[in-house]
Length: 638
Image 1: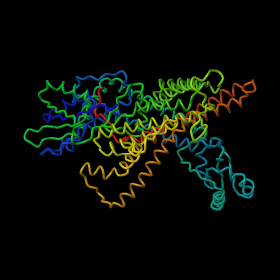
Image 2: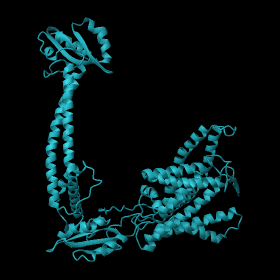
Image 3: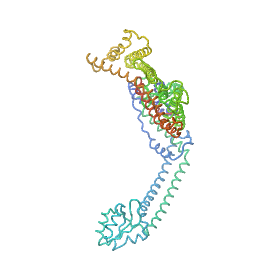
Image 4: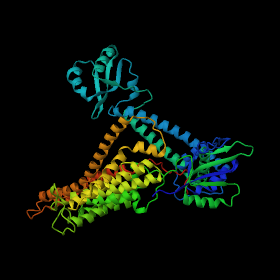
């Protein structure tokens, strides 16, 4: 159901707004509206302009609080705002010193890592690097060659090249090494190596000793830097833990103050000598009553409650029994009901689980879905898991009605019927599967019910056309209900109503539906925005009437899928049992188990989607708009 809302306006001295927010509003859920927009008819109102001086300090507090565990901390309400600001600024200044040292250490470690990455591929070179770097007549080149070219290089080039290539290291992609060449031939040799995709690596003269000794030295230095960083991080963390209680109290104080400035953005002020603030918003009727009662003893706050408000449309807050709340997920996917619209949560909960069970009737698989769904919901609180659990309960019930246990049809007797074998004879049609006939009848009943819901919504919204002349209004209900009644009489060989009564039951409702727009304008004394001639009105009415009749037929026929899936489930399990060799008397239980799991997963998913399609397209479309806006409490009771 949709909770009843009340619009409230709060006013009081401008400087008292923070106290009111902290003392009263923080304890209730209120959907705040922009006071200037809601009170446009009130003269001399201005925005509550106020710059938040604590925004930056609060952001610093947020950064600090992320580093500590606050689960066991409690805010000290006695801490003043000035003390909170001073504490955060002091801690943040100390943390800035740590951050500066962190940056220096990280930069130093990064340089050491870069130097190590350069020298480590050449640890296979057992020669002093500084000596190589100071050769005078012989040039050297450190680098790497892709393995794609090294074979070509060694086979076709290296033997005829006046150069020495020394391999130091290789991996899956490259061979690292260096080559030596006389200075007089270096330009030509460099060009040859470059053509073989030799990638040169420049070694600076900061290295001394062999590459292996340099790599070991760099590793030790990096290890030392890492230890210093860890010690530094520990000191930083210890500082925050030491002041954790104070930090948390300061954070909550600044959070409250920051929140108050956010509320001010939606407030207005009277432009008079004695300035007053005005706050507007929506509360549930229950909360509004308690809130108003609490304010009675406060002479500085004046509150006005309204059941109806000419400004914004009330937001929607759903309140359903706890077991049915998971089904609100389907409502939110389609769209929340408007404030004066029927909440279909209970309707969806009952029809969805019932139809799913009918289409997927099996005792064993139903119990499996119920246990698995509710267990997953208890563990992860996934709404869809709870829905699967409820669907599993109805699958179990229909499993008893159909006499099916894990696909076996001979373990228990069918309480109602066997979907595949039960047949009925209909006039002009002949024999037809009984489950199809019952599904069509059930669908007709649901369509009539949704029409009644549509009429209720039309009455609530005071919409004459929707209530009386719409396809799903009273005219549509009379026509479709008459069709259902005539079909039932005909199928049971009862006498049909006379011609005059049929005319009243069929023709008049259709004419009202066809010409609903001009009739509504006549009754409500309104003028069409786009005037049309009589001929165009008749043509438009004809095609609209054709579409209406087609939708009645297609929507009704759509419920055949309920019976079709009930039959297909039995057929799929027959295939599984046949593949498992059940008919031969020597079943392969592994195939039986795997087949049940496959059918349970695949067909369960398909049936779930098909039931949701029935809900949205065949039922919701008849009575539900779902154009409400969500109730979003600006402040929540902690």
